[in-house]
Amino acid sequence: MTTHGSCTVIVGCQWGDEGKGKIVDVLAENVDIVARYQGGANAGHTVHVGEEEFILHQIPSGILHQGKRCLLGNGVVLDIVQLFQEYDALLARGVALEGRVGVSRRAQLLLPYHRLLDRAVEEATDTKIGTTGRGIGPAYEDKAGRRGVRVIDLANPERLAKRVAAAQERVVRRLEELGATEALATLERDMDEALALGPRLLELATDTGPEISAALRAGKKVLLEGAQGTALDLDHGTYPFVTSSNTTAAAAAIGTGIGPTSIDAVIGVVKAYTTRVGEGPLPTAFEPEMDARVRELGGEFGATTGRPRRCGWFDSVLARHAAQVNGLTGIAVTKLDVLDTLPELRVATAYRMPDGSVTESFPADTWSLSAVEPVYETLPGWQAPTTEARRLEDLPARARAYLNRLEELTGAPVQWVSVGTRRSQIIPCGAVA
Ligand code: IMP
Image (tube, rainbow, N blue to C red; front, side, top):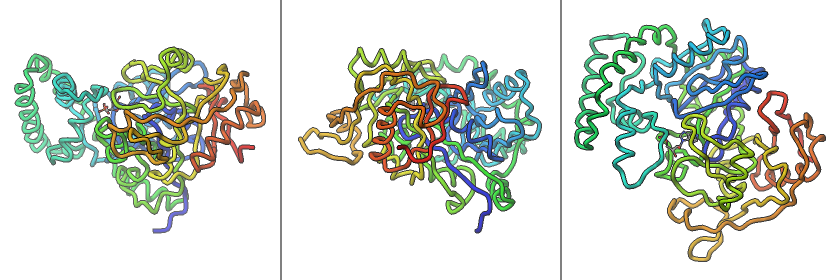
């Protein structure tokens, strides 16, 4: 199918929290539609507009630009209560929303029993994932198990009641097995609250695939916004310490209902260093003192759960893996300013495996990843503030050299650099020289 507009995917290339929301927010200015394609309220996109901070969990960050249409695709698991809390909070802050939010009729509903199960399973298991507790895993399990309840089911109360009862019954049995029945005390009330929002949700229902395809045919521009990151992808991440959806770029087509040939560009977002929240290996983790310092400098606490994020050096083994899996056409490097005071910077270029061999590929064996020793290259720090830079030329030469090296090692051109939380602090780049 020929498309006349343009369709760009924004994808995280680490363990989430790369600052995708900020990049989407800036790019959204020049597009017509922004759509989410996977995940749910586990995501937390923080966007600063003027002095105001907005944390969005479900509605795409494009919503903060007047007139843009924001869609939640079929690949999303939709927490109705959370969605309308966000929707109403935006309204209360004066954001005009009439006709601007659309939800796929095929999207799965994440219902209160999914949250109960998520928390009870985490509590009971030996291999803790450190989930966000938002019910994501159980909701995707119901989808794959063909027990899920979809937005369109809200239009048929009889079928809805049947499907919800069957899914809920199963959860109750599972909670009984796990000895976690005290969690059931508020379930009925929470279910009533969620399902009462059904008619309101149906007013937003659309078919995202045809809507996006028609927009592209009409010459419009579309951004597809990923949540979490490549290392949290169900297939390509550090399994089993991953989220329950495909976070990578190919999922953008499936999760919105367009064909993969409609996608023109894929921009990978990388933080200038690495962070991870939740369990699982982080090969380039800092020593404790440096970890505390960078966490403080970068404000590295989860937007959804408030948990402290573990921090480490930039990992180009992971970045190359992300470039390959996502087919990156460019990268956006965020939070460069967090490194402003450091005397020297390290970048992992390879891993020394437990058997002594050296690899430049991201290993499939997650447990070996916990035991690898990164091979580092050291670059001099620039030790000068970058937050006032508005053009690439304004950055210290050593900061540009650092970006150059990330570009070389990742194999994708740097297209954006962020040096702060405000829109004006996101610098568009041509060649990094
Ligand atoms: P879940 O997505 O809540 O099931 O959590 C699975 C794993 O993904 C955990 O390690 C979470 O900390 C991580 N995770 C989920 N969403 C995000 C996110 O938006 N940013 C960073 N980590 C996330």
